[in-house]
Length: 296
Image 1 (tube, helix red, strand yellow):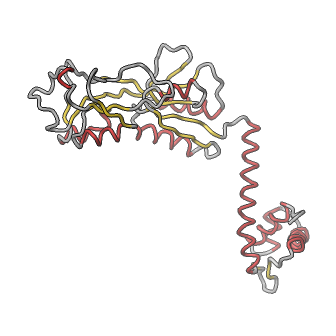
Image 2 (image 1 turned 45 degrees about the vertical axis):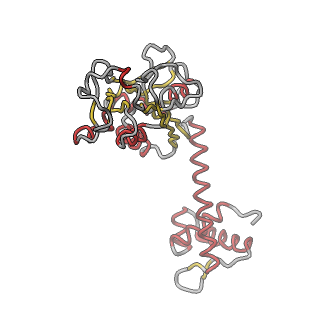
Image 3 (image 1 turned 45 degrees about the horizontal axis):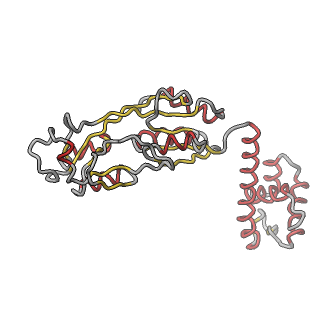
């Protein structure tokens, strides 16, 4: 295979696609003799007869069919390399790192990202999930270009586009709690009952208390879907985003215990990025896409 030319492979592929040397010459804007010579040279270098020239139209030999399959893969890879080099030369990002936080309404966020990246196939979306203070930590540590999560609006290092409000509702399965008035339960009365909480994925967890009852037994889970399952099965109680449990609240599989002592909470979900870091053209386009669309 030493000395095989890319030009010869392209000529061979064009002959197979067009069914003749003349068709290949027209497609490649070459002369008929130059295409014929390129394929002959390739066959000589490989020690293979790739084309059967005995009929009106050339056709692949069995060896030619097997070789052509691999040749097409190689030609496509070369095209990808050329596109990749052009992308690097233009400054366009090859990868954009995005982190979705636990509070995000995932269907809306994922739909938005899907539509954006479908129009930009040269940039790969690297998507991660983090909880509690994990998303902001990844952003501040330079491991994410953009996050969808709650963020401190007064942090001078960050800029944000507010997308929606997410209500968190304290819920339990019917019969899990013995209280007659479920909307007037004191926190200390909840201590005997297991509270389900989300694990902070940050390497340096936040000290902020997210709904945790002091002194109560608790269990931790990685995400709200697992938390919802535990609560539905009567194994714990906890706060869940309203968008995730609308059907269960409506049909009575979950009941709200929100009241003056154990209130719900609303969090603003935003697209957040570093203000003090440069952003490439694809990241800027995504930021503008979010600004134009805004509310989910």
